[in-house]
Length: 143
Image (cartoon, rainbow, N blue to C red; front, side):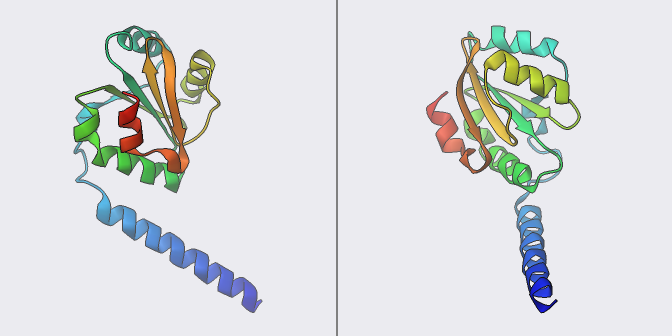
């Protein structure tokens, strides 16, 4: 029983720390939202393919139920000033739009992961990163 309490306490402390870290580092609500285009319909994928022939497109697949997704999203938000001049940004809530997420995997030939960033160039996935690999400076190298 004492072992259980000790593990529970350690886990609780970690999640409290994570929540506070994210809360303290988040930008003001709404800031940076204008840069993201919500990806909500499979028909938008055809538009992304066409657009990617003239400008790289970033698709960020986000799980609203995952703390790691929140951290990855915050990293992207903190790098918007570097990303927006070079690429169009699409945000996909994969919990709400599962079928669109599945279609992204099918069309671009990537395994579904969450969180996940794809760079689409010339109609194809040129780069994919997930989880802790989502780093703005790495993404910039592929734009």
